[in-house]
Length: 54
Figure 1 (cartoon, rainbow, N blue to C red):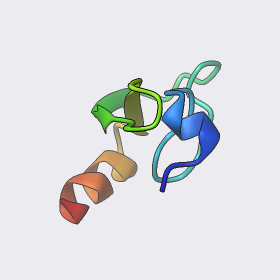
Figure 2 (figure 1 turned 135 degrees about the vertical axis):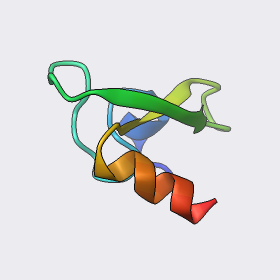
Figure 3 (figure 1 turned 180 degrees about the vertical axis):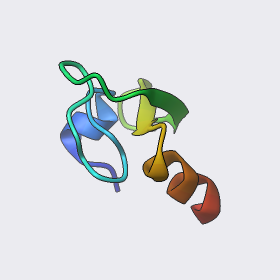
């Protein structure tokens, strides 16, 4: 289950890092069923972890 900020698309779904005010590169990894918003992961290690979970 996604945290509230991740479901809103403003935090990484893996590490919870804030994405709006951060220079961290991000990638869309899906859509939150609860909000319909795209969800993101940090492009570095977190995106690779999400891909491994699928």
